[in-house]
View: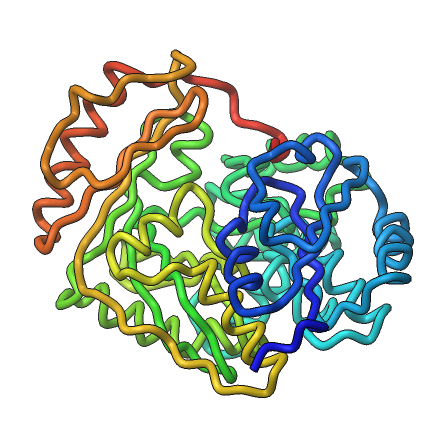
Amino acid sequence: MANRGERLLCIASYEKGQDFLRQCAEQGVLPTLLTIDKLESADWPRESLEGLSTMPAGLTTEQIRNTVAWISRGRKFDRIIALDEFDLETAAALREHMCIPGIGITTTSFYRDKLAMRTGARIEGFLVPDFTRVINYDELREYMARVPAPWLLKPRAEASAIGIRKIENPEQLWRALDELGDRQSLFILEQFVPGEIYHVDSIISEGRVVFSVVHKYGKPPMQTMHEGGVFTTRTIDRNSQDWIELTRSNAELAPSMGLKGGITHAEYIRARADGRYYFLEIAARVGGAFIADLVETATGVNLWREWAKIEIAHMRGQQYTPPPARVDYAGSVLCLATSDEPDTSAFNAPEIVYRMKKAHHAGLIVKSDKPARIEQLLNEYSQGFAGQFLAKMPPPDKPTA
């Protein structure tokens, strides 16, 4: 039975997680949303909220802590949830400060810091592209002498492909580090491994994966981010070796970093050179770029709602039961558009189930019981989108709301 005194504080620096908030309210839990000032009028499910508080963007952790402490004078929160990637550390620090259950700063780093997650995965015996810290210069020299170029200089705590630089030789690295100055230790240097990139989206409960689904990107996200182009991803054949191997590996890796319950979005690469699967990164959140919609189309599972159910079940000391999942196939095609409201009506295959409504974006989701049909449609539609809608912009140095 729901206890009307149960409360969650949800933090979101970006507009997302509406279904999480709705699910909380439907189960009798009172969510309060803390977001930034510019999102006060965003499309939040206000009928599901006990309260909505805003703060200026760019506050320090200490300032956010003071804000939350002030809100907590009148409301006792049972859990603190970061709905967005960039709020994970803040939520972890708040949990530790307020002695609220949930993962703390150290565990969060394994799902947020690319150096920590690679180190953790390697210790657990998983394949990762060869990497090194950007701290000790002798270490860097030894690494570059041992590992053939090119390398990738990656921010340790950004999402997607934001801020990644491809480095072709040692001199280029030293110049890049000069530009970064005191910020260089916030990066890692990693071997560039050409190959096909996959993402596995999972539900974890009681420290084990209870649901997962495997998708494959068209172009690698880094290529789309830096060179422009159309973003695609699709469910892979459930009978394929890729599905079997990645499902098995992810079931071991995703909870091995310490997450006992929640959602993970992990990326893996099958190297062109040796055909083996390498771990790239993992996040304790729902995937972006409409991946949640894609997963729901293919399986019927709404990751935002299941995340809320997990949090509430664990808060109440109950067992979480994953929902039955369909075994359809889905794919999405997405790009920045030159027009504010691009007209995608010329793309009219009967498999289309969703048309994106977002300014300066063109996007579709297609569904079929045949993986080959999904692949065919994405190949056709990505070319069509490139010709009709595609807008090119320089890659961002940091995410934008």
